[in-house]
Image (cartoon, rainbow over all chains, first blue to last red; front, side, top):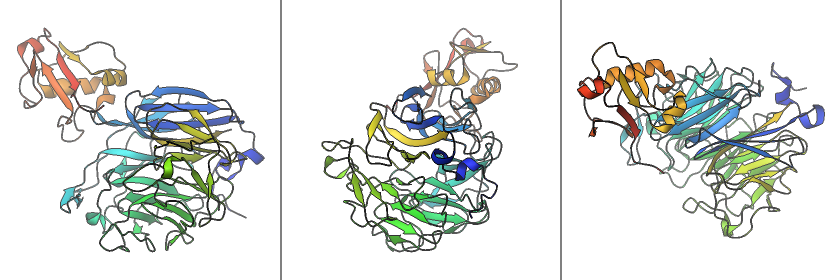
Length: 391
Length: 98
């Protein structure tokens, strides 16, 4: 029997089968504001609220698993910098909280695009990951890559400096989108274990609650770096896990879809029959640990779907064997992208799957991907999508 | 009394409409005006100048009396007409972005 480790039951339960569900809330971050999309559990009719923080870039917003009314949002612009917004009523009202992200100690340098040393400079928060158990604890993945944590509801932020300081930091280089820490996975069975991913450094793991870190990139191969199998330097786009099996990780790398069965100690490719193994997001079905979703993109220089057809690919075998999901998605003249944080699943049964595009569409499937329909079509470019299944 | 004009995004953030009026105990400089502004509206901290270095953000400009004061040293006295409230101290976003 799986131990919950003191986690709220909602995190590990399958609400559609065992709990009453009042509805679904989809949190959408865009280039020009945030939008909140709500529906009842049937997921057929949607209400659209927004733009919140109109005109600002909302890289990410996410709800606390421990208190679904508690939301955090990363709000920024090139003019006025970074803000963090917090809601305690499910997004009806917001308050700005702390926005001071200061690297611990002497920041040091990483490599710049031309290979020269470049001082670590804070640019923005890419990803906010609320604690599984405490609504006031939230992690922030930032550019230039570092991990911060707040334990007071976002009022103050402290870096977990062991990540940048573990040794390879000075050799990290930015990807085309900047040197961002974009993925934070908290192990629901072990509060000391955290996985993160950085473009273009790779994946890292801590087994002591973020104090110390080490790279977990063995098995990755990137022809775009001098040593294709180097310990760091890989452009990992996203990693995902199923809450019931946290040692099994799935990765969408710059090129290649990868799988690890040993918490990142080793990786193997599971791209299989995908039309392209380049892409950004990767997602796991809420109730089927071996059911995965990716959105193939033509190439690293052509960020749109192959053949102008927007296709989500699903594997029900943990990778290698993939099927195209096309019903309800445009199958001609479609040249949007789906960014790394712009897919999500709900925990209803059947599992709902959601993604947003750089063309401003948010698509939803209430049948695990078999069929799709747009919730909304004409938002600003979508940067992130998260879903809350509401009690 | 100092009059400060904020850009729309920062007025929204600070929940103000129109100009902000500040009473300064001493000499009016960029630093004392921004200190007073951030003291009254803490949510503006970090949006106009850096938390630690207090350097103006790259795409923020300070105008007054038809002049660009953005590159003036922060402790330089502001023009008398700003210090007396005859003219506003204008904070604005530079023409950039989309």
